[in-house]
Length: 421
Image (cartoon, rainbow, N blue to C red; front, side, top):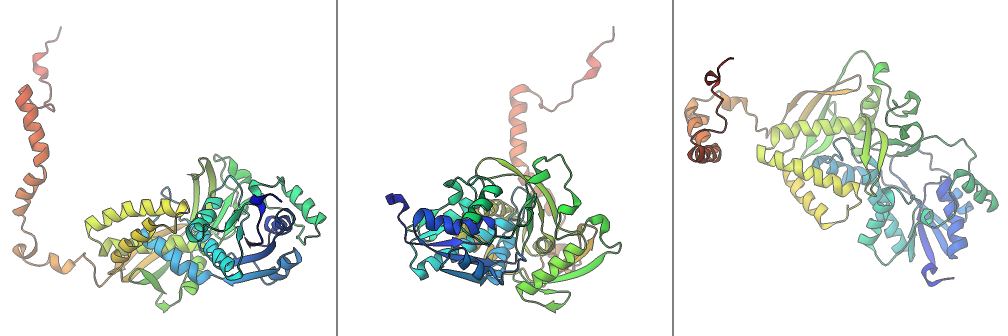
């Protein structure tokens, strides 16, 4: 065995699907190592009850199955929402946020088990390989990283099934979906199949979470969401923890066809991809948080936070979660959330989330101030001096132009000097 393949124990990010099931014996065969599997429950909706037995039957010595839903929402989803992070104007970063969490726990298990390697089942042309491996580098760069899709000769589902049969690996012989999907508590993504042509309208049967807006209820539904320092705490007046709250919002959004996004995005690896996302509860939550910002942030902070959101989205999308810059941006965002306490009222109707009301004790929109005497808050005479100072650079530029040419560059031509033939 070559020195670059010397590894004793590997922790594999394991889903129980065909690819990761095949990776278990492949690692043992090609690296001669012990394999420990790790499966994270991040709200993907799969039945994980038999996954430990399946991993061991595939050749793993042990399998961790852990519920990370609360950590996912509290430490990854909510901070990203608070930052106002949207990738390329529409993507709410569902897959991007989950990968560093899974990889972090994978590293922790590797250290707990004394493993010297980690492995994942990401392909060599997507974003997820970067997200996993940047996390490994940030948290424990001494771990050897194995990415089978960049090494092995398996290139199709048929190849994988043949390999599984040869090694007596238990796999469910079901028809493969024509779509590649990723599902967690925040969203469900779809890629591949007919979506490879961005001109075609996605087929209705592709959607798994949301009803079509046409089939949504004909009557709108009003809901309220309460926030405490930027963290959602209540829906319709009922206190809820993060898991119950997101479950409720997902159900409400899905019922009304909310949260469908069709996007051609720029992958980090340099190619464009066409994906469709279903983020029903997330779309509602983002809209509600933005509504409170309208009330509670001053102009300069709100405008600067929009810039922060763009950079934050890039960091999350590119797998740079565990970086000093992301931590520094979180510190900025935390300050902006101090007064973000209040209630937002929304109307859900046929795919739309319509803001219909918001209130906050620290709102900077003060109707009572507007009723004060003119000299107490706003004296209209002050506007003249403000405008003159605000426009001074424009005035100086115009004066310089006039001094040089004798007239303003915006002067209209004198058409009276032209004679008709």
